[in-house]
Amino acid sequence: MGRLTPTLEVIEVHGDRSEGPRHGETVAVHSWFTAGIEEALADGDSVYLARGSTGLEREMVSYVIARDPDGDHRFVGRCMSEGESLLRDRLGSAYNARMAEVIGSTDAEATLSLLGAT
Image 1 (tube, rainbow, N blue to C red):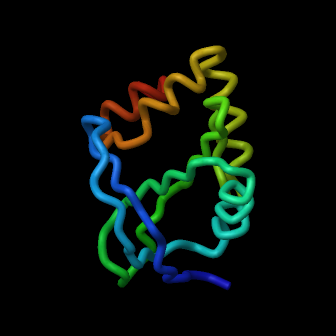
Image 2 (cartoon, rainbow, N blue to C red; image 1 turned 60 degrees about the horizontal axis):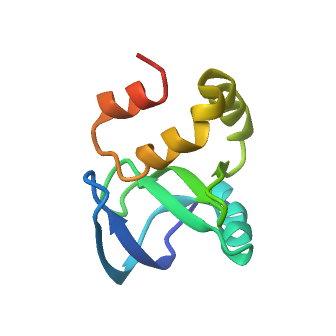
């Protein structure tokens, strides 16, 4: 399927964890993510899109994290389960707390540190 450009209702999460206003925004996302996004939303989970770029000339969404009502996080999309397994092994019981901190992070070094990659 490739790249899709749906218009989604979004709330931007800033680096300081503050939230912007709810608004409609067209995003470029690979079709690998769509079924997982739809499933997570149907389950009542919050879904966070990590945007690696802006504009619709290329895919903006680098990865997608879903958080269920109990605070458990998972990556959404095809080919993400192996990376999630590695992070769960690396972070152990800190996995969910670290993922909560990653959401909204715009500092690449800080994100890598949170994920135990530095």
